[in-house]
Image (cartoon, rainbow, N blue to C red; front, top):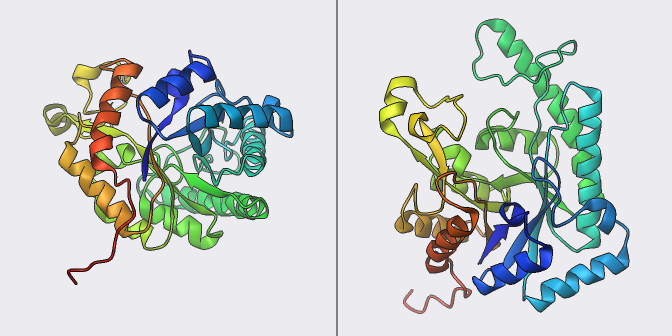
Length: 321
């Protein structure tokens, strides 16, 4: 197990400078955005797809800094009701899968996407309750759309030997663990989680229990290390479904925080231990989205906490047993 970083927060730096900085901080893996909402500052797909020379230069740069790639990311909405937007997201995802296979990267991360509430609607619709009854009908329509699409993508990913890590994210069709398992059961085992606890904290989902739930099915393909703090004074007044901008920090019910600023070191050690119990031994890829500090400071404080939490060796024999 090792500490990794999604390099989007360092998008203003060159790839070489970002890699050098992360290596100096003791990071062992990088997750590279190659499209969608995360952008492609450090891995423009058109420059690297099918280009062996460019790919070899990337490998040499990684080797120079003793880094590996934990995953590629292209977060977008391939189920968008607007055909042009859906087609763009679908192309990004398919090309990311192809590029991952060429780079010997095991997983591509993204969102499940979100359809409209019906075939004639034009705006994605996040269904959060089964009543009034048209909402349940809309959900069943969305489920059919999602299963059809991800069944095809699951087969495409399998053909390329690549897993898909879906980030369980509100305002997407899959936003919680049982919904992910339902989609996985209806598609194939290439469909799994990019487990990001930050979106689950404020939903009231227990992190270690849900890691066990998904891990027992082998459904955790990648892990985002990202924290969230619920601010109870605000949440008690308006709940946790908060539409205020993330930059209105004092008035929000919750905020994304750097590792250790939502939950302490003991919690993250428990997460690491639970991940090991269910057989996940990949990178903990830090995603910085804390508006109360800079990217560099947030990353460095997160690395500091996780360095003390991760196991660097494999378990020995239980001689005491």
